[in-house]
Amino acid sequence: MDNKYLFGPVSSRRLGVSLGIDLVPYKTCDLDCIYCECGKTTCLTIERKEYVPVREVFKELQNYLQEKPNLNFITFSGSGEPTLHSEIGRVIGFIKEFYPQYRVAVLTNSTFLHKGEVRKQLKGSDIVIPSLDAVSEEVFNKINRPHAGLVCSDVISGIIKFSREFHGEIWLEIMIVPGLNDTEKELGLLKEVIQEIRPERVQLNTLDRPGTEPWVKAARRTDMERIAAALGGSELIE
Image (cartoon, rainbow, N blue to C red):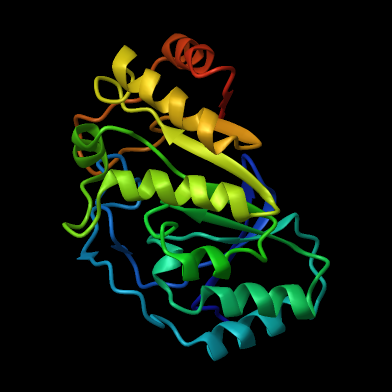
């Protein structure tokens, strides 16, 4: 049977063999990041709702997992922001109740972590990978091109609050965009916030495939190593 909401399994650089769950329509997001390898956001929104029917997601999971596939993770990701789905917590709870042998990971752009209900919905996950590309509002706006209803300070406060409440692991991801968030000033601000978040891992990424804007280039390895050292020994995603 063809799945509408599950994809993979894929071989992930970080998570091994991962079955993906995509809970929002293609390119539905609250950011329009200049580096996004999925393309330009076509539905820029901050409305949380049941974008895809949860019961249909349950059916696909049941059909797929009944064969007991060998997976390292079931991962909420895809081409948009998974926490836009208002019932993501129900899907996580379903997996943990009926298929507890599988670990759950959530990739999020962190924009809704300042909302208590979202933090509560993610608490059943094993790993949450929030992204934080900038600390200053100016660089945040240039890189992430957010919906008008979002501000960087809320993103930062949300990650910090979540880090105090969450009992799983937090792997903070930073996408390096040369000329924007690799300056001494921005790296200094990032380091201060990282020290407040205290994540289990800090992972640096850079462009692997063409992004939304053609002028966005990948950072050189030597620069990535310099940035990792400046931030206190971050990991490079390769």
